[in-house]
Length: 189
Image 1: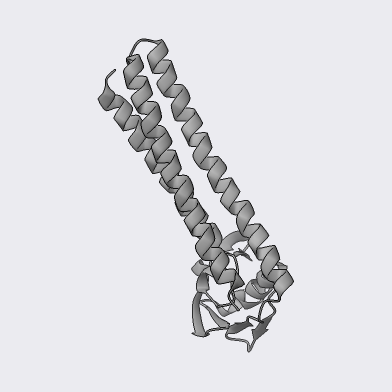
Image 2: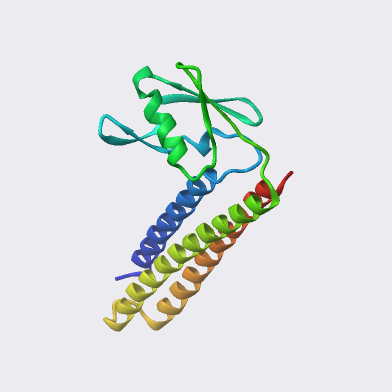
């Protein structure tokens, strides 16, 4: 066992932490702000021929105006299923259909709804922090096991622990930045 293998473990941890950040970004994109965004609905699960399917695989999604989303199904038969999924979601949007296209008009958010969305966002931020800390804990235990088995020295252990903590701090800070930006978007009137 060498410091190179410990470095590989740290690289693996960094990749897993990046995955947590990516997952958080996807989650935050689905939280409504004052502006329309295709990300708001593209991952919405639609029951299509008995199978849950993401909306982005069933329709083209565009934003013709700042507070409007247009959904054009590839298959006209899926229109009713898409409307049903939008109504069942927690987006609080009412789909308007002309038989070919669905229009979603986003009403301005009131203060109470904005605060609820910020709470939702903070919950997701905390989940991401927990995921990063769990990765740190797993790797920390692995490194300690290496030291117990005399595969690395005590100095290598200390160095690896410091590097792991720096890595964890970097990702926790990145999560906080994502939250700050998203909260600003949500609270913007």
